[in-house]
Image (cartoon, rainbow, N blue to C red; front, side, top):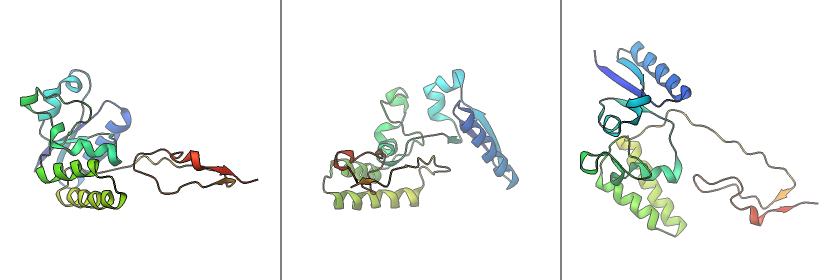
Amino acid sequence: MIEVELRTGALDQVFSLGTVIADYWQRIGVGATALRASGRLGQDPEAQATFPGFMIQNSGSGVPGLRRLHSANVRLSENGFQVGGSENVSRYLNAELDGLIDAYFRTIPVADRVAVMGRILRHVAEQLPVMGIYYNPAPDALGNRLLNIGTARAFGSVPSWNAHEWDVRS
């Protein structure tokens, strides 16, 4: 039987999810143990970067989360297991994906950005460097007297992204 470790962060919500996943994997024949990476283990960048297993974490999504998949954000011995800002926890290194991410952030026309995002999503779906397990929805409640509310908005933007265009119906 294969044995794997499921590391989680210190938050109870994420650790609980790790124990549920470990239980499910055990039921299908995979020996899985959930381990809360807190205290000294949670603060050791080398241990966080080199453990054999899976990491269950609550992480950002959308456009800001793209930077986490870039090879420049992988903790390696060459960079002292340190990176600034975003962190590529999966340690996924892929020049093609790096090029797509770079192209996304330097492309201005919306149609071109959407096309690049489609290529990024296809790459992630086929190669699976990360996999979403659950999502934290953020429903918006807006009054029916408000006019000019944009329904489509950018990844990671707030509901009031175009509030300067709103008006109130009398």
